[in-house]
Image 1 (cartoon, rainbow, N blue to C red):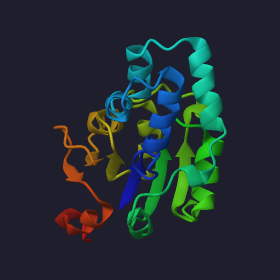
Image 2 (image 1 turned 180 degrees about the horizontal axis):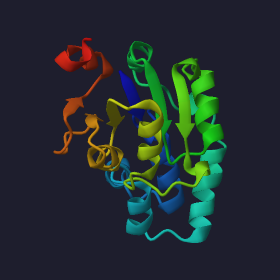
Image 3 (image 1 turned 90 degrees about the vertical axis):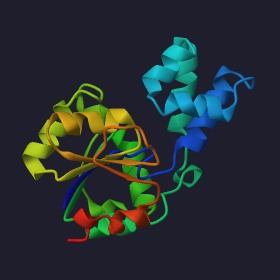
Image 4 (image 1 turned 135 degrees about the vertical axis):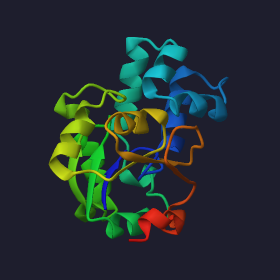
Length: 189
């Protein structure tokens, strides 16, 4: 099976630190739950919702740039799914060096064939251009993400989709923890 992955919130549990950074920037009067609900739609949505200034955006990006891999962790059992796949590729809005550093720190880089990041100039998800590139090159069987914008490009290309820790309608499969991946009949091959 060839899998296209989102990175943040799908392979790596980065939302707690992103939520903290957002709250530090926009003010303590906003709860973690509120901020997270907007970040889970998209970073762009959260930026627009909170009407962040360019100065605030720079502060957020500077803090994110100073994160160490220990500020986040891989989700439990994600390595088992990565190991099980024939090919794993990532499409992320994060910077390539941040993703590569984190993957290497946790020893997950050996499972990843290619990373397409915001550094590569593709339009942001849900535009399917980056997914089309990866699908043409690797014949993707499944796209896994934690948000609608992660599965919409795959759906547009006819690729099966799996939402992780998200029950929004529209995906072919849903899992809340990665050990559940192997209970789905289609993935036991």
